[in-house]
Length: 344
Image (cartoon, rainbow, N blue to C red; front, top):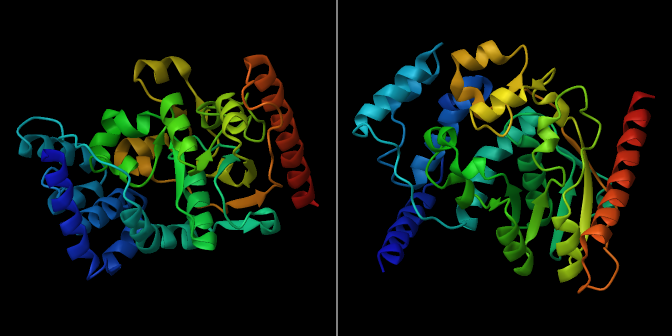
């Protein structure tokens, strides 16, 4: 009953704020083009539609914009909250907020900053549930996946949900950076087998990176080399007769270029990866830039729909591995072909 009452209050707040929409002001444009301001942009939009007493305030926002100011803002907020962490909330996916966030914030980021575009759209189905499987790189916030979700939603009107690493739900930095439950409310599905299978059973259009965290973790040297694919999407595709739509992203390697990962430090700080690059001194001065990435041109090449053949009740690991390897080799060959053709 308490959760239902809280949800009713949140819905009422959202509907009231939706009547007047979010006005993109000169300050928001400034935040878009000044990298430390992206975190302000996301939190300001959230606070327009939701009451967030634990969230950042204007004094703290302004501190984001000066070197080292984020650390002062973090300390001030911690004191303001009574020397505690922001409270976690039980939340669910909210397609309405996903849509307004897409239209009012992502639209400008994708159009002017990442310049995302879909190619070979003749291979894109009109409708139906599917697993959209994409190569993953960049060693940064997963803007390659977010941008693809935006483009598919914009073109087809689909409700697209990405499979996201658990660190985007649970890590302390995420809980301080972004509003409580932000990742889930925007539609992300935890990258755990039970949650993945539940989303497939619900016939969701899922965005999935078969390389998992190995993708962004591989760094600049291996940016066009696919890491081993997880087997879960092959087994679930076969079991529930859900097709796979392979998509090749070119440009995500430039989201955070010239990076490499230090595994020992990554594990020490319990991070999904620890990107070391010439940009790191800037990140240390402006930690709010953790949700930012370099301006790039993200091109997505839609491949023909792939169906996993075989008895849906027979998904042995060895068979799934072989099918995953075959699909990986096919996508790898396409990446090489696309890179070769774009050089000529």
